[in-house]
Every structure is written in C-alpha cells, then in structure tokens.
Length: 307
Ligand code: HMG
Ligand code: MG
Image (tube, rainbow, N blue to C red; front, side):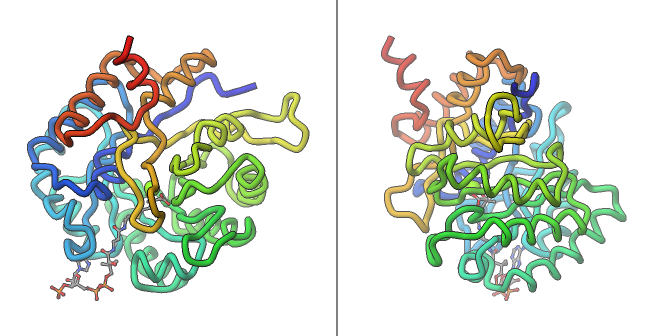
C-alpha cells in the first residue's frame, strides 16, 4: 500500500544550482522556477539566504525572490541559516522558510560552522520570529544515514534532531541522505526511529542519488506495512531536483538529488497522483540542461530524448 497522492517538493533551483559549477544568471533561475511551478509542482524551493562567501552560486537570492515572490500561484520557500538570513528573506518577499540542521557533528561544523546544539539555538530564534509572523518553517536534517566525514550515523541521532526541530515548530521535517549512501537497509531503520518521535504526515524524504539508490529508497519510504515485515513507512512527501541538478561538494563524483522526472515516472507507474505535468517537467529539465550545457541527470529524460 502506498499513499494516493505524493507531494513533490522541487529543490532544483536551490539544492541543484547551489552545487553546479557554472554560475546561472538570475533571469534563467527565475524562468526555471516559473516553469517548475507551471508544471504543477506545488512547492519550488527557490534559493537560500546564506553567506555568499559560502555559497556564491546563490548570491543573487534577493534578486531571485524579488521576481518570484510576485508569481501568483505556488509556494517558494527559501533556506535560512540564521536570523540575519530570515530577515533578508522576508524583506525580499519570501513567505516560507526552511532551516537546516545535521545529524552529524562534523557535517554541522563543515556546513554551517557550528555544533548541532548551537544550530538548534540559532534556529530557535528563527522559528520564534517566523511563528510571530505566521511564516511556515520546514526543517531539514542532513546526513540521516551517513556523513562524509564520520561515516555511518545512528538512527537515534537523527531522531534526536527530528524531535528538536518538531519542538521548534517545523511543519515538516525533510530527512536528507546528503551523500546518497543509504539503501533500504539503512533508510528503513532510520525512518522507524524518527517515526517514534515525529508523525509520519510531517515527514519528507530527500535523497541524493550518488549510489543510484534514491528511487529504491523512495519506494520503501512510501510503502506502508502491508506485506512488508517491519515496514510502517507511508511517507507522502518527496524532495527531488529537475534534471537531477546538483552534485555534492562533500562526495567525490556525486550526482545530484534524485531527478524530479524520474520520481514522476515512478509515481505515474505506481498510479500515485502528484499533479505534475510530465511533458512540462521534461521541458523544464531540457531548458536548464541546455542552459548548463550538459546532458540531463534524469534517466527518464535521457531515455525519452533518444526515442
Ligand atoms: P560564519 O562564517 O560562521 O558566520 O558562517 P558569521 O556569523 O561569523 O558571519 C560571517 C560573515 O557572513 C559575515 O559577513 C556575516 O555578515 C555573513 P562579513 O562581516 O564577513 O562580511 N553572514 C551572512 N550573509 C548573508 N546571509 C546570511 C548570513 N549570515 C552571516 N544569512 C553561516 C555561518 C551559517 C552563515 C555559513 O556557514 C553559511 O552561510 N552556510 C551555508 C551553507 C549552505 O548553504 N549549505 C548548503 C545548504 S544545506 C544542504 O544542501 C543540505 C540539504 O539539501 C539536505 C541534504 O541534502 O542533506 C538541505
Ligand atoms: Mg540536499
């Protein structure tokens, strides 16, 4: 048994483009976001209000949001690492934000230059400000099964961070296999531990496809108990990136997030609704791949372009 509807959270313009070597002009980012929303994606993560020294690819966050916030339809959340980022995001027109913690200490230090508990303190300030202004906050956890520095990460550590993010008021918690090392063998016990402390309907999965495991991992995350010993998953929100955009600075040769086109193909095959127009998502992927001057990272897009 699987959910009848799965919400796809498109993260290409943010998670994808933050890791692309090539700098993408602001107007191209805006057109990409517009095409993704027009394809029916209910949520398109637009950019990040982070330090431009750390992520120069998204240094135009303000300019991107200035246009995107005027789009009539769609939700366009942005990442914020601290109160400074939150304030910049809101004054640029963002109506939703996402905070991002890690399940591994070393990754937290490498990514946001502070410990896990320090990051949760920063995020408390962000969430207090957000809740006062009725701004929904999504929470991410990185390295939910493996860390590029520490190796395997325990399910209990993920559950600890998830519980803290829930207490801060996050409406949804996205579980990130940042370096794409997970298989159903590690993803299932991690989800079971998190589901002890966070209701399933508040969970999303965010898989990078480095080892080619993302679609298998999504499938087990969607399935509920029927027929599967020990599995009580039933997650109904999946993050993905058009054309499989992105790489990972921490994993050599890493491919990006699982491709949105491939997730839509999977869901269509399972008879699960996502309300995404397959033709329009394929052409959005073609558009950005052409702009980047490289082949799409979506296997579905490549297969269909050959035929
Ligand atoms: P820091 O250097 O420790 O911060 O960075 P600081 O407070 O000492 O400030 C240093 C400088 O940054 C100052 O400027 C600040 O004003 C500025 P200076 O005085 O040197 O000119 N600054 C900012 N500028 C713009 N916007 C801000 C901001 N904050 C400070 N919000 C910090 C700490 C968190 C800022 C930094 O480490 C950072 O920006 N990190 C972002 C890293 C990032 O974006 N990583 C990728 C996203 S996470 C991800 O991809 C994983 C995910 O996809 C899930 C998964 O796959 O697992 C979500
Ligand atoms: Mg990611």
